[in-house]
Image 1 (cartoon, helix red, strand yellow):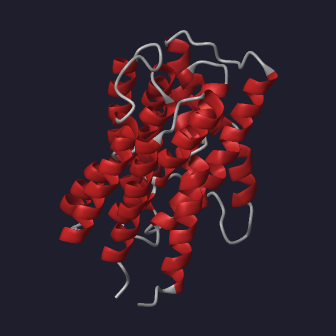
Image 2: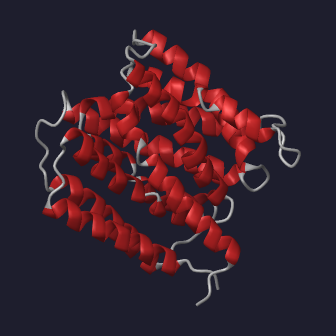
Length: 289
């Protein structure tokens, strides 16, 4: 079976974007500011890069669409819940729970977009989720972080908002460019994150130079990683893309092990292999005819 060139490029962009975004939770931990404030800096520092990209003659910023604004609101809620989840539990666990989006995305895509999944796709989704969960469950649900239970609950809520963001971007990509959507969604989310950070009484400014470096890298991560995902969403089924980004928690777990000594043992490795196997099966089940 020969994969269409556009689909092949979209898959490559999606995988690269997921790998880049996998570094985001580690940068959040290193940013040394309030969790929601870090989300603000992530979007605020990405906007200059997105503005430069939009100045190309073929693009342009244009006007904000309702879908781009909806994506920005959903991403604001996603970052708010997820960053607080990262602050309360392990990097790997928060990322894996927050990336249980395929279940929600597949169900909503079925209802809204009539993208009925095949049995093999559903089985592949279950396999990916089982593998991702194994990576965390095998280490137990003990005291990893100041409040693991709260971190789990916040990360689970983030999964819903990330699903809504996925669906909004996917719908917007039918008529809008990826850069345009990224710019307007970021501009929408920025003041919301800033206001929420102020209301929560968080420290807005990073306390160390390393914190500023982490925030800047988060901005670049958002432009390159999330931008690649947004571009790919215009060329792939939404549910397929949602499964593919499960590569993100695999990367996050590996970095958490390397940087924070969050052990990555035998069962974590097995879970990673199972999750990636599910990704491959999902792509095969929705291959271009």
